[in-house]
Length: 325
Image (cartoon, rainbow, N blue to C red; front, side):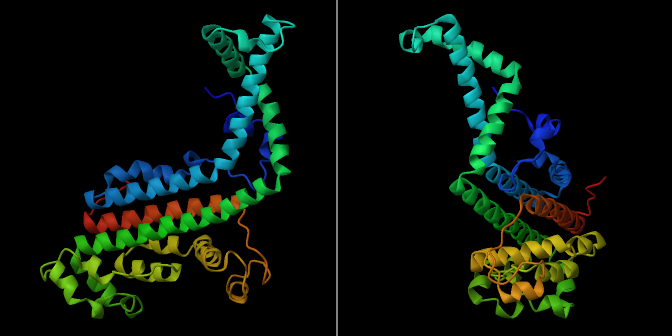
């Protein structure tokens, strides 16, 4: 039974609006594109459904992971408020008796706890007081703040990984389902160079009985590294005739996500000369990159949006379906 204030209650209270920058609020339900993706997933061609479901699961998992520190603060506030009500009831019913819980029967104690739950549930103001107190406490705990900030950076890496996995799986599934569409990529020199066409091994051919008609994507994209947004856009633009998708891949947010993920993974977030030169977001060489919760929330929104556009484009080719219909 929740006694801590909900997000809507916090939004209605000016004193609750300023959640510290190192704490991420889990609000996947407020990501309209993620919700649209969730509603559209069961309308996709069958081979795309598990890919979409995995993508949705991965994004929701990122939200859940990032919200753990704030969830701990909420839980601590809830527990403190509940026990406060328990001790107030015990003090009223057993004045001057020290610690009466040690002498109570199990049923009597459960009755006290049930009453305390009801009181705590009916009056969230008390929980709000504890929540404010706990926010102030954790803001002074260097280790807690440092761990929460690190979690934001790792959340960015997980966000990119979710997106990279989706793009690779969709490209592969589309080519496997409609092998003739590979001609679009082969006719584009910029995209063709990324394919594995001249490196298909005899082992792979043997694995598929020397018939790759249903495994063109598997063969051509094997070991493909999709670590750059430019590579993703080049192949996807050649494969899918979708202006919506081209526009989605042009997102500066996705470009930043790609570059920052690279910096965190390969340099532990220490800004180098290349990052300064190519990204130019005001950070200096040698500075430690720290992602803000607002930046990460925007990145999650953009990833969900581009993922939805990608799945729509693939569905049009594989099935000729229309997710908006």
